[in-house]
Image (cartoon, rainbow, N blue to C red; front, side, top):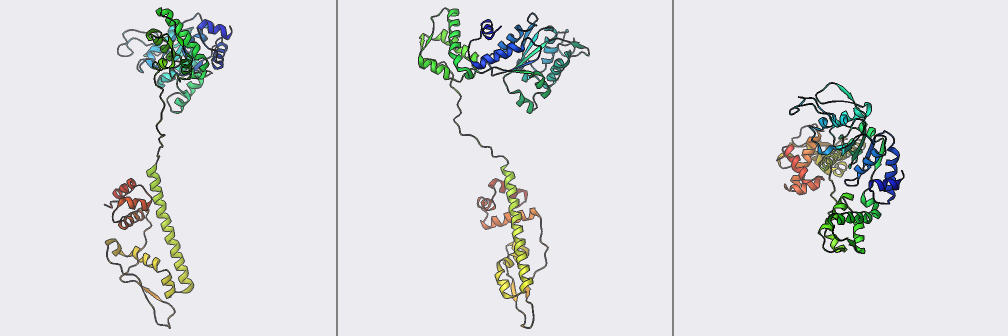
Length: 412
């Protein structure tokens, strides 16, 4: 049987290369007994292809049943597919055969297979691998000889990566993938299908025939048809029944087409981890400041070792020397007056000069990042007289992060 014969037998309309390819794949795999995974958008005709595969197979005289996995509650799906024993759960007043037992020797079509719970997927995998299953509430292993054709309108591999679908089941079902093209992927067939549907409905309801103007045909083929063939058929039926004008223009057709969902909003940019980056930048700032202080201190020490203590050395480094004194002088934290370092020049016959700080004690510098961070925040707040927005800009962090830091470090 060639492709055109299959189209005539199963009422398939269209000459799209993608459609012909899908029919050819179905024709080739039908005589085999391998599992098929049919993918395609909702309304594109996946169930029609399951009938093609069954009718062209050696199981065509056996039973065929289509099961919508998404329409069966999770609590009863195992019972529906594999059956149950009497008393196995509340409401199980008698034993019941499942679809795999009823369709033994035939074909079962599992539509929306990606909606199956993970526990049911494990049972289905066992059927595919060994033909064995167990009724709910039973311990007896039973055998079945069923060909499984599965279908879904979602990307199953995305579901696998999300942990919602078993990877081993995916590869077991996807022995031969069969992709059904959407209606917008075969626009050359849209007008043919519309004419066929309109002719069927006008005959059914005994109404005058419908004709489309050129602009209406252009609108019909340019529409996106998110519901695919099913939506096109519904629109054709509405026009055949409701429309008083039998010559349909684009303006009339537009009233039957739902508005296309075009998102004109600007793209939302995710600001991922902004607080984390702000904290990291703050830590980097602390480390860089510490490094700069160490470099300046090394320069001063090298200068003192090279030239000794003299007025020129101290005056050249006076800002840094005074800053060191501020950092270690306890009066700084209590807003007390600051007395700068003074240099006492000894008698000319002495070789060195002596640095004397009033009321100073040797204080070991803290290397704690938390203390440095706290000190930077205090200094920024003091510099801008408590204005946190300006202080946050000075520190290079967000105002929200600064509020949280003030709270965490008890700087209120």
